[in-house]
Length: 118
Image 1 (tube, rainbow, N blue to C red):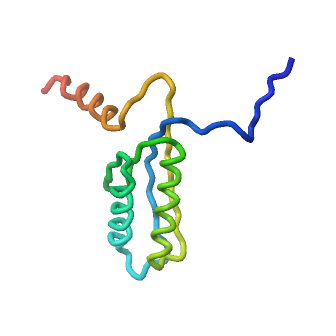
Image 2: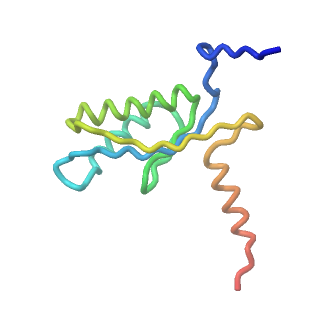
């Protein structure tokens, strides 16, 4: 007996958290703060939960929403005159429970708060 998987209709995960670092290549200066600011405006307009950090952005939503938003960030940066964009993405999904990305940080912080001080 063979299991048949309909790969063409396999759904994407209903929830995902992705951390991504978008890297504009070929900007006139070493600074990319204007490009980062443009992407952060896009994140805000998306309505998805997100958090910028020093080396990228964490965003949460359905797989399709998250990946679409990262693709839109590429298009936005290209439209602002950057010819090449490279992005590193680390994405995670889970099926056992729903967990906001900030809860993961809070959990570790609570463990650290319990550490004894020397």
